[in-house]
Structures are given as structure tokens and as C-alpha cells.
Image (cartoon, rainbow over all chains, first blue to last red):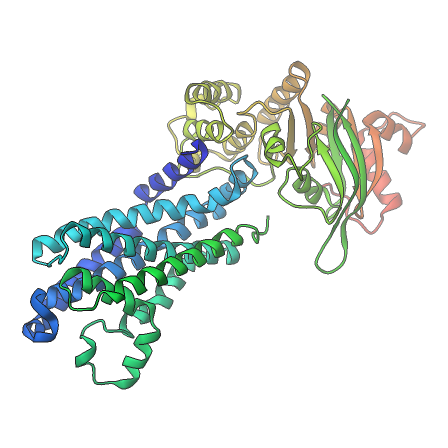
Length: 253
Length: 255
């Protein structure tokens, strides 16, 4: 890897370690969801629609998605801190390519999100979440959550660079949060009675990520969801990264 | 040999007004050059363009013979820049900031560390090495900011109001360091300062910019003789006389 890229990424990771509030909050929120949902409505997991994995495996994907949401704040925060202190201008003046200045915090944030996702998967496995394809399921979940993280981190960084507002990360979290509930979050499609919610859920990318994870976990959703989610997340992450990189040229110096 | 060549440089604000309106300037290698001008004259815009932060609308320039269109990275490696606002990571310590800066400019670990210590000693920052940057005094923050511009041993140094916030002793010390670098290492120094006594004492050449145009370019002594040919006046007095006479609508500051 290029020395400058490694240097900047290393710095991004160190910054996150020094200010771990955002990823830790995301992790805590995910564990909280897992605990509360499973404790509150886990009893319905014995219904046939939830398959053999029970409600824990069914609700587990939502904790993965919310984890990415919580930790996506970091890239925007790192950039924001650098812009507020004037240090970003110093970086901007250096020979480091400008795309690298933007990508480094995004990659650092994504790595942090991956780390916490692995931790969450381990906790899930201990708690009894089933992984239909074993290690391959874990890889699939990691792949989708990484792409989802890149999507959110890129958007967060891009908005931060364009607006210079440190609330950008919160904007992304708040904008994406409703998507979690406009989907097949708590119940399988067959048990949702509101037609409007079912209709909206088809247009909601979160639905495909959720169902793809459910395919990889208890196998309650068909395999095509995984491929659909893979395509959606690849496209959204690519668009998001392009948006962030393009935003690097919009900064007022 | 000219180190900085500026040809017909234009930069327009969004409202249509010109920040720079056809700037032509040559600065020789090893020159200690100061750019003077009243508020809003275009000084900062010109520095931002020369340091590659902004792109001109029209015209061209070279730094150390390098063209920004095709040799942007080479220009950035060649110049050292300390703009008006301090620019360092407040959560780091001076040594780490200087080492990281060195690494960013392609120095090895050992070399960066060596340069960091050299500069901390030069700027009197060694006693502060265990403090976080944010906890440094205003003067020391300024010193660190300027030291960071020197880590990679630039050929051309751009300093925008470098001594703002420094006490008189620190200012004197700072100018001694810069003068020494200028004389011993033949570094070209391009400064803006509101302390005209400093410019008078250290700069050999100058340009005066007002309303986006270069009004005078030459030696500091030539400017003083040009404004007040009959008496031996300071740069400060000459500058004020010139601005009052030619740009009475401008404030007599050099911010």
C-alpha cells in the first residue's frame, strides 16, 4: 500500500480510537436492540414463519444494520474535527492526493465498523444465532455490512465536506433511521398486514440487506435477496464514494 | 533566476468583482519578499493561488520552474506554507505533529523524527514536547504552525501574517530563524505582514497590491524613495503616505 495512504488511514484509525464514542454508541445500541427485541417479542419466534432460527436469528440482522449506522458518524467527525481546527487545510496543502484525504477516514471508519460487526457476530453466535452456511454466512454478512458502512460513511463525509457542518453524521443517521422501520424489520412479510408498509418495503434498500442476512442466517428468505442486496449495496457504496470524492473539490479554502 | 513567475493572473469573486485583476510579478530565488496591501486588496487570494489552494480564473504562474497544471505534487513538495490560521491537529503533541508532517512529505521515520527535534529546538518548543498542541500558549502554537511549514526543507516559504500573536521577543526570534534560513539555505521567502517595521527590517523586495492590481514592485528602498524621494522615511510611513494619496477610500491597515 502507498505510504501516504497507509499513513492517513493509520491516523484515521488512531483518531477513532482516541474518540471512540460514535462506534461504541453504535455497538451499544445494536446490543440493546438485540436484547430488547428478543426479550420483548422473542416469544413469537416459535411461529413457523421464523424458521428454525427463532426470533433471535430473525432480528439479528437489524442489529448489524444499526451498528453500521451508528458508526458511520466517524468519517464525518474526523473530517469535521480537521476542518474546524484548520488542519484539513494543512493536509490539503500537502503532496497527499486529495482523494486520499477523503478516503482515509472513510476506510478507517469502515474498518472500525467491520471490527464491531465481527464482535457482534461472535456475541450473536454465543447467544444462539444460527448461521446456515457456517463461515460463508459470516463472510456474506461481513461483505454486506461493509458495503453498507461504506455507503453511510461516504454520504456522511460528502455532506460534511460540502456543508462544513459537523451535524452531517447525525443527518445521515436520522435520515436512514426511519428506513429501519419501513421494512420487514420485526416481522416476516407474511405476517405484516399493512399493505402500505409492504409496498414501501419493496423500495427500501434496507429490506434487501435484512432479507439477505436472514437468508445467510436461518435461511428464512430466498437466496435472490442476497444477490439483490449485493448489487444494491455495491451501487450505493460506489455512488456514495463518488459523492464524497467529488465533494473534496467543493470545499471552500 | 526567477523562483516565482506570475503572469496575468485573474481571480473573480462570485459577485463579479475582481480579487486579482491581471497580476504580473517575478520573485528571484533567495529573495526575502513581502506583499503589502490594504484590507481586501487580494493578498490572501494571491497566496492561496500560489500555494495551490485556489485555482486562478485566468493567467498562469510557476514556482521553482514548476507548473501547477502538470506538476502540482512537485510544487507542494517544494513549498512550505504557514497561512494566517494555525493549522495542526489540536489533539496531538508537537513532536507527533512534526513527525507526521515530515512523513506526509515523504521523509522517512528517522529523518522525520530528526527534523522534528531540530525544529523544536530551533523554535524553543522542546520544553513543550509533552503538552498537547491545544494546551500550548498562543505564541507556541504559532511557532509550531510555522515549524510545520519547514519540516520538509522547502525551497520557497509562504508565510501569511506569521508573527500575529507572538510577543516581541518571540517575533524577533522568529525573524532571526527565517532570516537565517533565507541567507544560509537560500530559501525564497514570500511573506505578508501587518507589522511593516518587520517588513522594513527583513525584506529586500516588495510588491504593493491594491484593488486586485500590483501598484508597485521592486526593492523596499526603491519604494521608500519613490514615495518620499526627499527624506529618509520608514516603510510604514511610506506605505501610509502612498495609500492615503492613491487609495484614500482604503483603511490604512495592512491586514
